[in-house]
Image 1: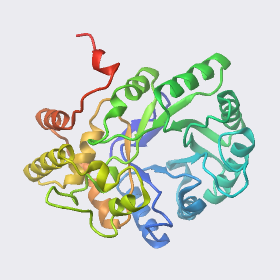
Image 2: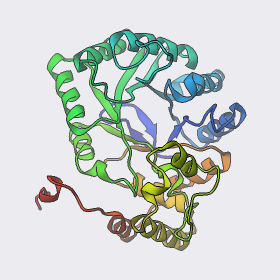
Image 3: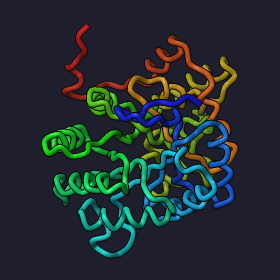
Image 4: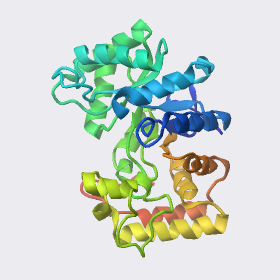
Length: 332
């Protein structure tokens, strides 16, 4: 597996990041260990979790696996913001909550420092100066090496970058956003911003909850039982059947199937490879419920799509841009 720099830092991370959200939820501890073993054996060194994943169980499982592994070879990322209890102060990006949360994450992970500490979501209730100054203090204390953001809008990320420069605080080195063939809005604002500022992009849901895994085809009238999309439809999640069961999606999947057949690859591998080859992308975060799913996903690292294949996937997945992006164009 190839390595890439984490934004403008000197740290190198694997071109695929193992997402640990399923650990302790869809995946048992035993299966989670098997997946981490396989990922590490294949050259992966980058692991992403969050304190709210399975209410801390994900971090605990990752920490137990790390006990007999060379810690310095691993790049461990986790996130903070979500509620971990009914305590009204046990949520958000206040100084009080962040200080409590980072110590709790370190304890569950069983490590002395976190390589990449990310704010999970914008917090409109807390002044950004409070959040950023607290994160700066965590880096200075040695508990955290680098900081990043997830699920920020363009103006929110730019404000954070500006404030950090203004106060000489440690700045974000990465953004963790949604991006895949079905959701390309990142290209309108955030991806250019990250490229301009030198931030790494760590892509979540590159297969959009399984929509781009090869499991779904236009002949279907409903998602398979017990699938993530079926659960999303019941729970009202964004990757629900009603959101994506349309002609635009089927055209993308048809194209993926054609290219996958031509290359003797899986649909998921082609969909992941497209993300990996997009300008400005550092590492897609691959999450799996089963070992065989991860085995297949890891195959995305040992081939490349041709220029014509990339162009065809770009064309079929393109959506009309809203204003002002519809009237903005790059100079040629």
